[in-house]
Image (tube, rainbow, N blue to C red; front, side, top):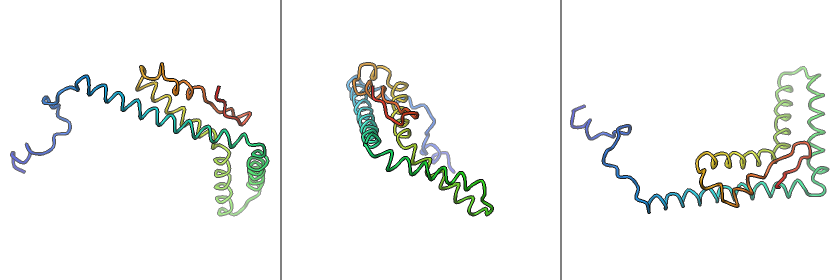
Length: 152
């Protein structure tokens, strides 16, 4: 490769002295865009969590969804103690993992929201302190023992 071609190539890691800093207006626009994106993501995740909360608080939810899954988990655990065939063992273990994931969907939704809250705390400390949506999202948690999403 010639010296001329090397100079025309991309210099990704070079410090470019010709890059001008953002103006105050540009910084404000960037800040507003970041805040809008954060609010949208928090709002979407909170809406998902509240939808899950509404579903798991339905009167018959435990009877229709949780008890059958827990029954299947217990049945599979018992069957795993006596299984001889490797293929049957693998199938039962796969079903067991799937049923456990089905039970954990409220916790997963809350964890996603909690992760986003943590990222905003880390990346945008001045933004989150006075934002009502952020404060509401920060209060949401999942209680495994009661199988409830707590929003207070």
